[in-house]
Image 1: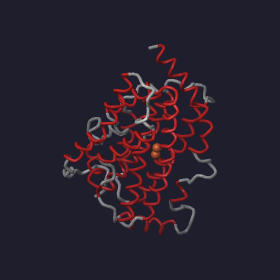
Image 2 (image 1 turned 180 degrees about the vertical axis):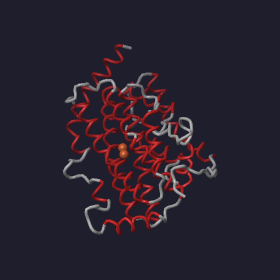
Image 3 (image 1 turned 135 degrees about the horizontal axis):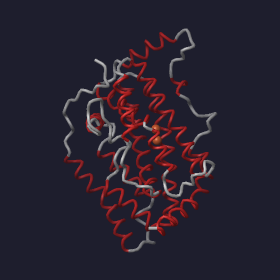
Length: 326
Ligand SMILES: [Fe+2]
Ligand SMILES: [Fe+2]
């Protein structure tokens, strides 16, 4: 066990320099990146109230399911304290606040923080949301935390974040196009810019894992297999509403996302396929027997999951969220 942890720390130290080299590519300079107020009505202007009126008129066209998904996405973004504290506990993250990995985590968090901020303000202005009910869910989710099955292992954590950044990219991108179809171009733009942040973050975490594969392929493969056997759970899997138990709202949120095609079982498989390709699993030869078995398991997984996805019925149950007004 000691050896295991020491090796992890050594590898994290090794890939830290590649991370620092590319940090300015993966995260944008603060002076250049968009801020929520670039996309929201400016309350110092005389036109503020007419702009809100316009915003509310467009928001009226959004379907019930889309509003539900958007609220679930927003709450997920707003639970950022959970993710930041989690990442700082990972093995190999030197707890000195000026260390490379702590710097990465802070800068990543600083970018992510804009997502919940923007969506929350939009939802507040939209006139579609019972804000108190939503805020209760957010507070619950942060208090409840999550259980993503990574432990403090950096390999499992970066596999998880690679997957998750890709998943949020897909889901924000789809909300953007659905919002456009429903006639809300402002919301579409908001989700579009968030999605492009997520794509950059996905690139970063995928790069870290690629670097890990270069020096510790066998252990990286075993970590990947383990995460896929456990299944990648979404960070909001403990989502609940007032009066409900931990996790009881989550299924209704994912049902709405599946129904609208915002994030589906097929998307899960597509992300897995992309990771298999990016990390060049097929051509990995430097493996021992366990590593080879792990690779074979992962390589066979997309087809297995697709067969399951095909048999899945679209969830039909209508559910009334406390979050949605009226
Ligand atoms: Fe985000
Ligand atoms: Fe993200």
